[in-house]
Image (cartoon, rainbow, N blue to C red; front, side, top):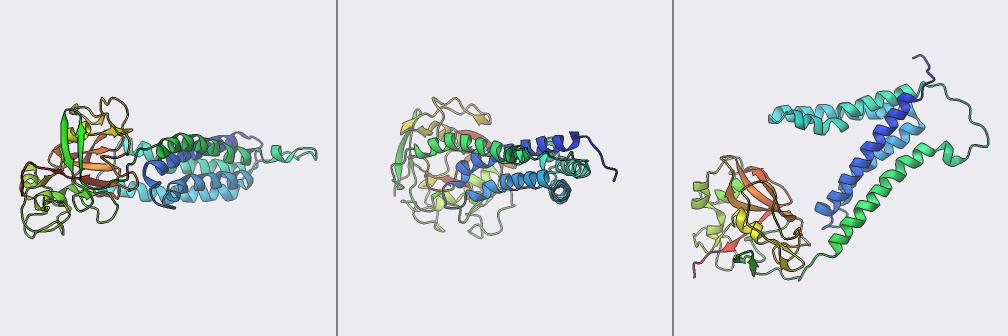
Length: 345
C-alpha cells in the first residue's frame, strides 16, 4: 500500500474509539451498580467491554496495523453474531441496527482507518520530546474513560451505600399510596435471587396438568389461564411452600399495586399507574430498598399480573419504571413478590 502523510485517518479512528470506550465505560459502571454490585466480582463482567475497547485503542495507537487488524476482525465476528441473531429472532429493525452500529460496522471502519494510519510516513521525533507527548494518545485513551468511570461510580456508589435496608426479609405489611398490602417473605412467594428463574408463562400455567413449570415457558398463557392456573394459588398460608393443592391465600400484585407501593428512605413515594410504560409520577424517585425490595439480592425487576396483550405483560424496576416484557422472557434479575388475599385458613 502506498505510504501517506495525512494524520486524518488515524485521528478520526482514535476519536471514534475514544468515544466508544467512554460510552462503554459509562454503561459498564452504571450497570455495575444497577445489576452487578450484589455479588463479589459479578461487577467485573460489566466492565469487560470497556476494558477491551480501551486496550484496542492503546494497541492501535502504538501499533496501528496490528491494532487495526484486531479491530476489523472483532467487528466482523461481532457483526455476523449480532445480525444473524436479529434475523433468526425476527427482531431486525432500524432501531436495533443503529443501536449495535458502534460495535459492528463502525468498528470495522475504525479498524480500516487505523490500518491506513500504519502506512503513514511519520516525522522523526526530536530528542527533547517528553515521554508524555510521545504517548499522549495512550494517556488520553486511558485517562478519559477512567475519569468518566470514577464520576459515574461516585454518584452511583453514593446512592448504593445510602440505601435503606432494615435487614428484615419476612412477611411484611406495606402501606402504599392509598393501599395497604401484606407481602410474602422468604420462600417461593418471594423470588428475589437469580436461581430457578421463571417466565410469566411458567408462573401462569403452574397449575395446569401436569402441575409444575416444566415445558411451559414458550406456551403463551392468556389472562384467563393466569387466573385459573397461576402458582400463587398453590402457596400455603405462610408462602413458605409451593404445593399441588389450591389454597388461594396469595396472588401476584397488579402493576398499579406495585407503583403505589414504591419506597425511598423508608417512606412511601408511590403513585397510581398512569396506564403507560415508563417512569411514573412518583413523589421522588424510588430505589431498591426495604420494605419492598431486598437490596442485597440480584432481582431488580418484579413481575405483575397485569397483561399488556396476548404476548406481553407489565413489569417494574426498582427505580419505578414500568416495562412491557414478553411472557416467555427469563432473566436472572427478574423476579416477583406475592401479596396476600383476604382468604383465611
